[in-house]
Image 1 (cartoon, rainbow, N blue to C red):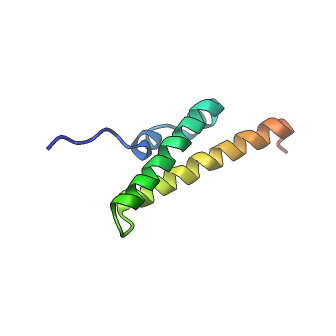
Image 2 (image 1 turned 120 degrees about the vertical axis):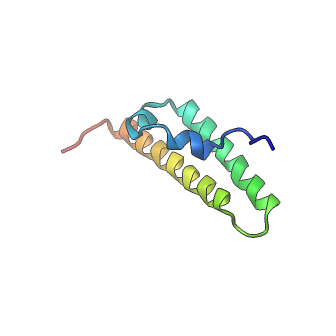
Length: 81
């Protein structure tokens, strides 16, 4: 049996945090859209919540959190301390 393509969770898992924050908004939005599609696909395919579903939701929350951080940093300027 041939394994399907990598999930977005597997791709995101290999990206370091610093690199994730430095991605552009369009790249992050693409990840977000793909993850939403994965979550919907898992929801429609299985009645119970599988490990793949939970991973897709976790990755979606991670990407949305990075988008929020980037948005706040750009709106306020980076003023730490």
